[in-house]
Image 1 (tube, rainbow, N blue to C red):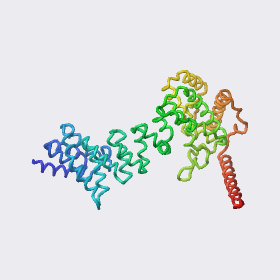
Image 2: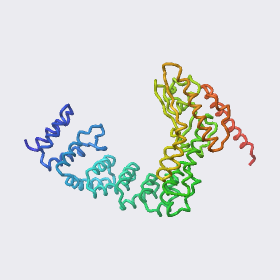
Image 3: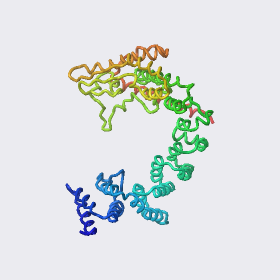
Length: 427
């Protein structure tokens, strides 16, 4: 059978996509000479419009990737890469021409050819994509640059960034010289955060590092990345203050909210009734809604599955794991041991058993556990006042709903009063 006839059979069986056809297609491809095999790969990857997405077709089938495996086994990868050079140049030329009507298709084809191209070909494709007017293509280029950085990309990335493309910030912070980052520090900070900028410029420009401008999480990362020895103790203090603040926040149903000292507080908003509602209007974990303090099991991810033991400790609070990891990186063994001993005392396990009324005790058990933490951390360690009696009460769903309604009403009234006062001001 001639290579032409073999190709015809391959095309026929490929279309069948039936049981065993993959094996037949592969074994037929094995019989092809090298040149015809490379032509087969070209045909199925490009001429037939098959787009590669991480080794798979867009319909999810990995069938055609077996051809690449055969190419590798024959040691033809270099020849396949060289075979991309002319099509890459032709595609970029067409894309750059006025009145090009296939831009979307050609850009996708370039991305597909990147996988098979030589190092020089890959470099050309990335540089070309950096100068494309479409954000999607530049983002694709940034993803490649982040893994395979070369100085030749600097000009294109800088040009995109200085023309207003904020997506270039990640690449700049990872690979650009310190002085470039220093010159653009304000804009980079507004995009990625001050802690990322401090990480890059802090060693050479320590006068710029102001920890008071950072959130607790950012402050921790900055102390760690710059190895600020004189501030190591801050990490331990921040950890306990974050725990104390979150415990206070939970027990008071959000009325006491010192988010300034709590890790990741800016990303969370608890105890709003809407947070318990699904897209279909029903409430999550309906089993708990008839139990006073229902919000406590939900807060800690405790579901109503039978006979499940839920372990909770100081590590259940946001940022504690990160703080411990940072302490380990900085050699703070004594601080880690202090935490471990305290955590051993304050660890607890909550059991949910649906066979009887026992689950109704879980919210009160969680409250008592939180009160123990409050006493040992907030009061004894940090010197705060004891928890007020009114916060020891567990609220029902209706009571929490009324509390939220009351707060929202006061906010609306305050806003309306403010508007009235503004109207009375003479100009």
